Image 1 (spheres, rainbow, N blue to C red):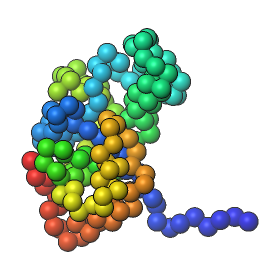
Image 2: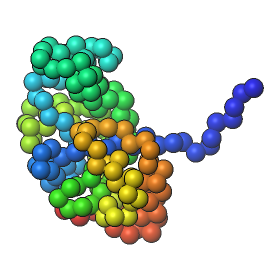
Image 3: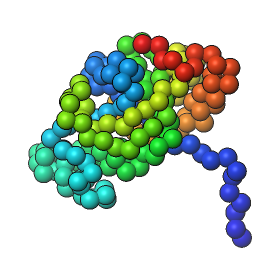
Image 4: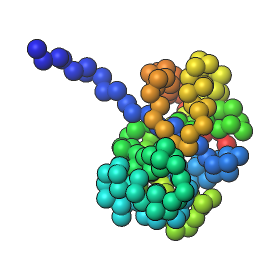
Length: 179
């Protein structure tokens, strides 16, 4: 028996950090991008587009890293380059402000030699709204507070998407991120 697919597309949602102490906070919001560090990885488009190649590239860069570290960090770069799609939601929890900034991925992966806050691996983002993290359940706050630099938001994506739709439909704090 063939299962009927839902008419509503489930949006993918990604969480990202702005570096130690939120160093890239203003860059993210004012320049409209999100990024990852490790310029030594070079342009990630030059690595074959499979996870094993990303693991191998990171292993060459950090030969003393544990197998778990290689999979975690190599996988992060693979996801940022090949799994994120234009139109996906990006959620940036600003620890300094206690706010959640939400945007849509607006461009393909790029490698920047400008070294903006040491974040050469970039994706352009159109910020669409922000809200106090207190608007989320405690469990959603914990998911967004996990100690990962870049990750797919899975457990609470429906909760966050619903709030984003509500904010946009009422135009409450939408369109211009608070800096």
